Image (cartoon, rainbow, N blue to C red):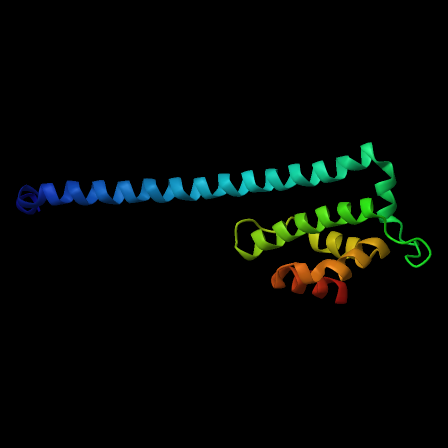
Length: 147
């Protein structure tokens, strides 16, 4: 064993160095991926908060959550349509990030999205504007509405 070590000590040191280097790099990449996923979730949360904070400056936007609104008697306003489109764009970002494995869907978000798009105003805006969305987003929301 000592004879082998004398003849191969350099290769042994190289091998240990390479294995240690690869191990450190792999660990760093894993940690970096977790940090980026957390940053992405924080950014999604920030965007969500900004969208819904607009209801403080324009409380009439909360009417989009009225489940009993008759769209034919009281059509969707331009302001409500813009607000719903911001939410649809936000949902699109989340769906695409999930599809691309950038971030996992937060717990309960499927039910939240389904409940939101089941409301009269969001559903009306969705039906009118969904043709402008990516197919994966259309499929995602439509499948939620069917469940």
